Length: 362
Image 1 (cartoon, rainbow, N blue to C red):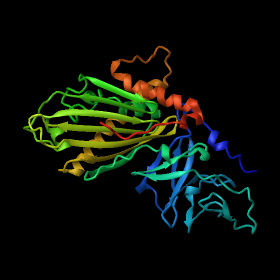
Image 2 (image 1 turned 60 degrees about the vertical axis):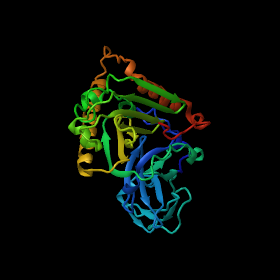
Image 3 (image 1 turned 90 degrees about the horizontal axis):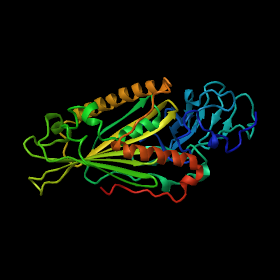
Image 4 (image 1 turned 180 degrees about the vertical axis):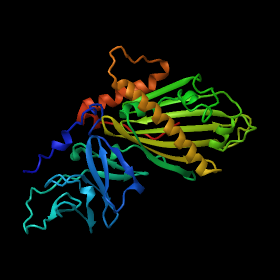
């Protein structure tokens, strides 16, 4: 079999992922997930194997041997070469076959196309589309802050369309009900909202009236129970792949007190049309009282979201023609995000031109 044309993989659109822009950066893994053991992950319908060379550089290859399509992730590393577990063919980080045990000559066509990968911030980013268009300048901003503590970092798989999960992260009214008593004292859903957007960035801001925090809120954000606080919840989307939620508490009775700010990075990447991945990493401006307890709380909140989103996906899959989605004003940010990402996918390579990215100015 001849080697596939260079653009065959770059042009492939997996079923159900017509809304996912190919020529963009997506998170493939956290830095810690990628090591010397081959890691298999499906990215936009493409099976990918990730590993580190002996020098520590990340490599991403199609997770299939071009000989008989055995997943290369079932093999092992010989130096920087990945050996197929089926017939022992060895492939270097450049995707070229370097050794075939059964013959001395290696055909030039025995190769696979590596994916562009970049380590940026906490993540390993992959470009699943045309490698010639991969531009590190299109990576979203790094949310590190000097002096902030990092305390929670995990990943989950969600059986839903990736846009549903991203829209959930741009919805600051559902915590009042789905996460009742955890992050909200009941005021967030009816507080005023402000939406800002440009061609590939959205910010939704809600701010509550001053109030005393409940026990769970005080524990989650290391707040004093006897001081009123104003909560601002800022949900940001950096199209097409990264969401950020900033929760900031200020103290009107102590204007000189520094704010308590929690920043959570929440990248979302579709595996296929029915499954996506979400990562969660948080930093805080304040000393942490109980990092294990915080991680437990956030995992519980994520699990509540997962249950809800998968139930919603089940209803969508029924295909009832009478089931028509009806939106309200609070959905403005989510709907604008949906149109933004779909527009990027429809624009194809043109969506990479002239893009603007910015860090939080909130």
